[in-house]
Image 1 (cartoon, one colour):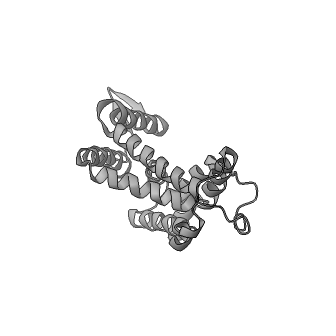
Image 2: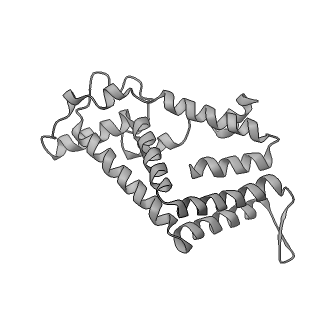
Image 3: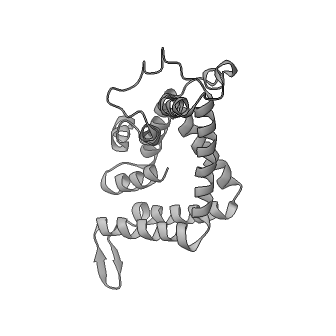
Length: 205
């Protein structure tokens, strides 16, 4: 999510894209990601859940299921994080304030940032806001701990499912992109769309 927010801010600052077009682009990204999800009947088929026979079997299941169900796992991780954040209103308030700051400096205030008589370049402004946001999240408030808790809970749920479900070797890699990793990196790649946000924004115009 942070990837999309930062990308959106930079695109709106550099390109003549209105806010409605950006929203359409984000919806297109979401639609593409959801279209790659496996059906729930396949994800939770009770007939293919067993305890792994040994450590090698466990490793194979984790590797294959993380690749095959990566979209479902990404959706589950996002949903879990959102739920945890909703149960922590203070964290939501902090994130809303940070989002408002980014919105102000990239959407409302289009003139260069000037502090103490010094004018900051766009790159310096981006780094300054990024550093201030991360410092606020991880050092000044408990938002960072909440995020880590949500991600940790998500990883436990994903690991349990991936270790108990028997992979279907006959169809497992039918839709896999050649050269794509078959490890945890493939799961993390699900949070990044196949095309850049700017590409979706251009298509949404």
